[in-house]
Length: 187
Image 1: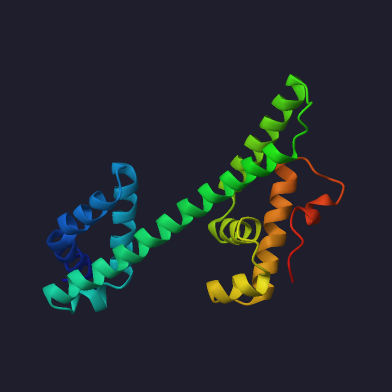
Image 2: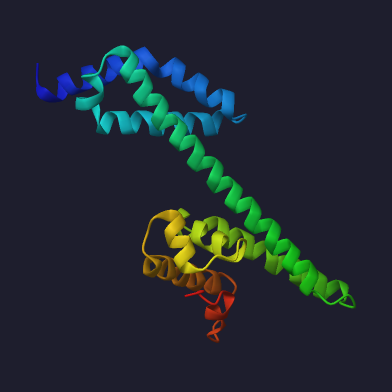
């Protein structure tokens, strides 16, 4: 048997033994079949990448390894969803309080369109940028505090915030340098 065939056989054995359990794990936590399937796919992609290690474990240890990966992915997905929701809520609150009470219907429609565009732009950011923007804008954390929470250097946080600001300013058609005013980088 060729090495590639042996690797595939080991993976197939792990997949066949545990796919129902992993699927049940995600279905119990997610109401969306599509999201559960995507997370399940990611678990088994990681198993494929580590198949030499995983296939060498006994059945119980394989299940434990897969469940740990599934739990971590589920937590990451929840945090990402919560960060997006909190950011969107905060942006709506800021937009509502910043809007003058005497604005016309046209001004209100324009403001709502801008907020919707900003929400879509934030959703489109890479996860690393979305997380730091959310932590900065919603929680008011400094780059050092965000770095400590995420276990990354504060300079990396500032870089990600800068990249996110550029993307958001492009989405909002801000060309006058005010993108850096979106958040003060909280050095």
